[in-house]
Amino acid sequence: MIPTLAFATALLAGPALAQTAAPEIPDVDGNGLWSMEELQAAYPSLTDESFGQIDTSGDGQVDMAEYEAAVTAGLLGQ
Image (cartoon, rainbow, N blue to C red):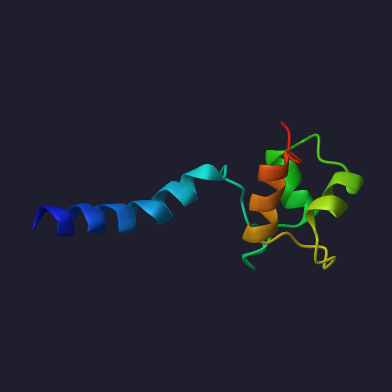
């Protein structure tokens, strides 16, 4: 019983920990992606150049994978 409980706890904790890693960035238009303006609300020093580095798909929007890669690479600063 204990190993099952420990496994279940570890399994459920992963998504919860991942969600707390990102700051509260409002998705104003509700499309599941962040525009430059939406990211600038959380990161006021974000420039066009740094947004271009973060938006690796070049679609003008940042998804969670791009955001996490930017955080890991140190591209986002307050």
